[in-house]
Length: 69
Image 1: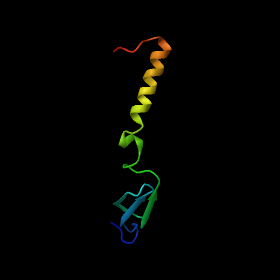
Image 2: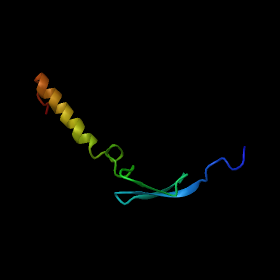
Image 3: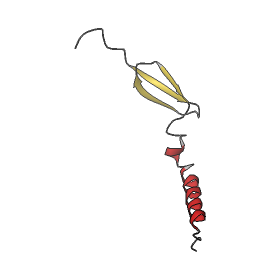
Image 4: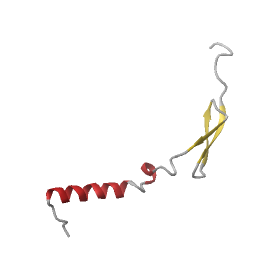
């Protein structure tokens, strides 16, 4: 490998808006992000169920299906 052409790597502290902090390898010394795996709805599952339930209810209403009990 050639000398002095590769960027310097750092153990970077990533800080999210939600307050989560974790360490990664990067060429930047610090990283600030808005959404991480601890607060993103896809990973937490907070929004997925409500959105899915709304889609199913919309489908049932559109085609006249009644809720089975």
